[in-house]
Image 1 (cartoon, rainbow, N blue to C red):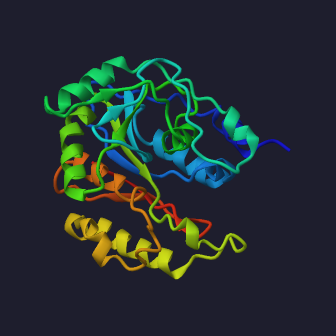
Image 2 (image 1 turned 120 degrees about the vertical axis):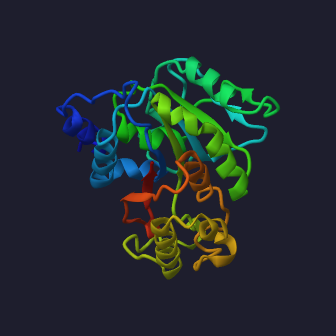
Length: 279
């Protein structure tokens, strides 16, 4: 039987040419994506929705992505070389996923722009690290042609205010055709998932998602920043917070006062895959 990702590639192969972002176009939005790990590649509807989301936007000149799976301070950038290798930072999945490749073009010019957007004392470190699965899994569904340069930026803190400020530093890149992405998972209580009942949505996951969705719809950054104390379902929804906090870089990179729009919702093994964009 053909793998669902191969079917996805066949389904999108006949899509119309993707119009490139051009100077003079509006700044690209910033995105928060629930990335789903390898099981995303087994969900045809999810892949189709991610692809349609990407095609609803102009093709970016480059992508700068922060993932839950690279926590490092000081700030660090992944390799800007063409064909950056992938980091297979997961275990227990079908061996096919360890053979996936995503050979994106060189991103040296973006590395220079990121460095220029940060304060001189930021201590930005340039590394040879590849893209982890929080980056390459959703991007392989959204941009399967691998024709957009991709850089990954480490997440240096989980303090919402500091992440919003970091996102604000990167905001100007959007007006240059750079798609700024925070990649996590709206709920991520893996120790509390009932794996024997994949269609069951636990109350802690549903409650947290409802709270977050309402705060997102209101553009209530203060409420979102208080998630540790205000959000129902904690700490089960996020026993550790690294899958939620990339949202704050996304919000910081947006124009102040812009209201986020949920673009993908639904559940995977009871976890919320809510994803959004904000202008």
